[in-house]
Length: 382
Image 1 (cartoon, rainbow, N blue to C red):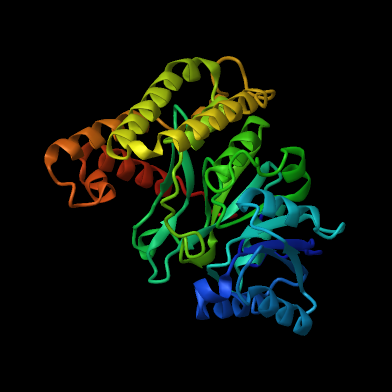
Image 2: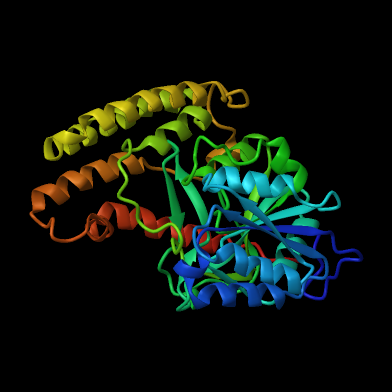
């Protein structure tokens, strides 16, 4: 176990940090320079940064090549096209040095603190039952962005702690979380590969929740290390796409893969029904999208078959008790549906749904209770 703040490893294991870049120069501006400099200032003795250019169209690849030329810790891999978050990270992980013990997945819109990596490795080296650990994520103005991802008992994901002032969170120790957020987390390399890496069924969203869920089904723990601090902008190179998609697609695929059959048999119909109603409402407003939506629906049915075929390690009955204990005891999808209806009936459509959603008593109560329970559950490194 860890032995206080003066505990030091005899040998610091090698770490490979995988960072995706897509048009970082044009989309991030000066932030990309701060990101690179913060990595250079990291005080961990043995790490490499494997940068994956995910088909950038601007000067990003040339900029990254110049970084690699001036620092041997940095290595660049260029992809011909944008293959999505999951596949690009899997490619990066496959190129890690053979001597690497830990993989870190880090977003390019982050600024890390000097000891962030040392604290992550220190925690995992002292806690052999922990498979992965997330840094404490703060916004650039110091508010908490997230202690980690959680799901309710029906697998609906949410981030705990968003918007809380950073000083309200304990400075040290760690908390038990359901899964680590893809913005910044460390994982034992052999477990990443044995769990199958990121599932490319999820090209952009919930792939981190799915990976964490699979690790927990394998019997492993996941934590947030409060001593490891990383600042994160969030969505800087993704933006808010208005591309047509199947409503609740990723959530449905997630529960088809990972949720126990007892809960799945009850929740799947609610999720599919909600998706169908949302799609019909979209077509009422935009009937010209019928053909495109039918094509997406056909591909979605194929993806559902794939997800069902990947349930090999999912228990047929209830989740293990240790997994149940990190699930929020409510049905967030049902609460969201109720609040969407209330939003439409309220006549407040000039306000964003997200703002309205956060004002609802039931949601806010569940959210705040989860935050308080998580923060009170802090275990200190001893």
